[in-house]
Structures are given as structure tokens and as C-alpha cells.
Length: 316
Image 1 (spheres, rainbow, N blue to C red):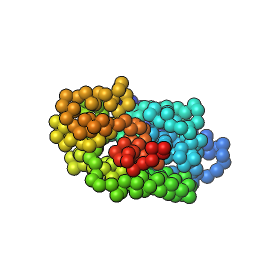
Image 2: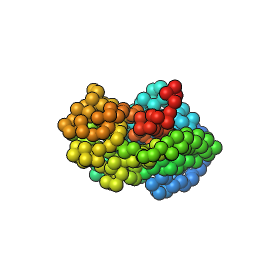
Image 3: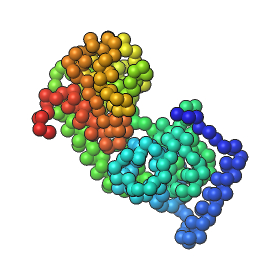
Image 4: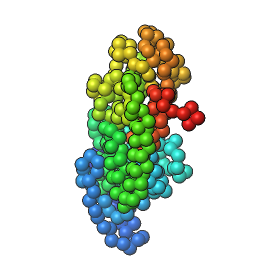
């Protein structure tokens, strides 16, 4: 992706100060209400001051957008990132923002009450793309990429608490947890456990995830063994390493090339992998396997059936 391009700091600060000043004074005049403040601590441990009710919301990552929609808050959204556009339940006509290069002027013009951002919005240098907006008084809260499924429940609880709808949050957490544990129980007694390689980027830039990622936790939930679980959180394996570890099943969520399963099976040397020899290579839904939200249950069901089809009724 392109590097984040900032305007001259002094000019941009002046512009934002003027715009925000106009916005706040205009809103105060229109409502005639006092602006009450409250402090919240976001999921990265940063204290954020929020002024007034949250009726105009910007979401900058699809996982955040899914949580917002699933909590019944879709009508509060005024802008989303470009990767959120396929999420069911969104209102029409929302402004679309660059995931890593959000337009500061557009954001200020939207008069957001809050921006709900994600750890992956940071630039390649780790710079916060919303720093200037934060400094100018627009509340920005961060939800970092979760390390496990429990983190997803905490993310849901955080968003629900932010909007004062704790009961809805508890209900969504309960229903998601119930489905996750049902999937876990379905394969808990299966022995021996099958080994899995889950590919999220195709050759020659193969990529997968190990411990410290919610995807690894998903593999654990279905009762399988991640062949790269002990190689760090972010793993770029060689073809030789995949062949040597010889997974029983290969899962991939690569959906942006033609015939991803055929491409994977045709790689030199892969014909010797058990998963390929036994035709155990499966495509998993990209969105639900890559976005830490309640919608991971779709991917979990697909993964579980792919790895342990014998425990499921074919009519399901």
C-alpha cells in the first residue's frame, strides 16, 4: 500500500483547528446543550476523552464495522474503510476511506463524534494516521488485532460499553461463545488430531499465522494442530518447510486468484504432501477467517467440517 502522505503540519493543524472550532460552536448553538465529557480507556490502554453522545461514527477496519453492525449500531455510521463495503447490514451511501491513508479533511468535514480505529491502520513506520485528528480533539479509540478468540469478546464488550448498550454486547458475546464451544465440542474426542497448514497468502509470498493470533486459536478450537504454531505469530514459510511438516489438511482463504486450490496443489514438491495426495485442500471464507468479530463462526464451521468431516451429518 502507498505510504501515508501528510500535509505540512502547521497548515494542516491550522485548517483542522478552524474546521473543528466551527463545528463545535455550530453544534453547540444548534442544540443549546452543554457538552458533557467522559473518559474511556481504549483496547490499547489509551485514555480518550469523549464529548457528548456518539451519533456520528467512523469505522476504519472491517472487523470493527462488523462488531458495530452486529450490535445494531449501523445507522450511526457515517463512514467506513474501503474493505468494509461488502458487510451485510450497512446503510447505503456511506463515505469510504482509505484503510491506511484516511483523508483528514474528509474526516473533519464529517463531524464525527468518534473514530473507531484498528491497529492495522498504522503506516509501515508505525505512525498513527489519526494522530493529528486526535490532537485536535476528535476522539479516536483503537481496537488492536486480537491474539485469540477471547480478545474478540473483549472487543465486543468494549464497543457495547462505549455506546452504553452493555446488554446487547453481553447477548452477542453469549451467542458467539455458545457457537464456538459447540464447534469445539464436536471434535474434542477425535484422535489422533490432524495437522493443518492454513495459507493466507499464495506462492511465492506464502504466509500463515502461529501462536499469538486469533487464526491459530481458531485452528485449536476445531481440534487440529497448526504445523507452524511454534514459529512465531507471523510466519513466511518456505515450500520446503511445508513439505517437510507434511500437513494432513491444507486450508486457504486466498480468494483473489483464479483456482487457488489448483495453484496450491500444482506447486513443485507438494504432490508428496499428505493433504494433496488425499485431496484434502479446502477454500475457507476469506472475510470470516481474517476479521476478528463474531462472524468468525462461519469460518470455524467450514474449517471444522473440512478437517473432521466424519463427525458431521452430511445433511447439515
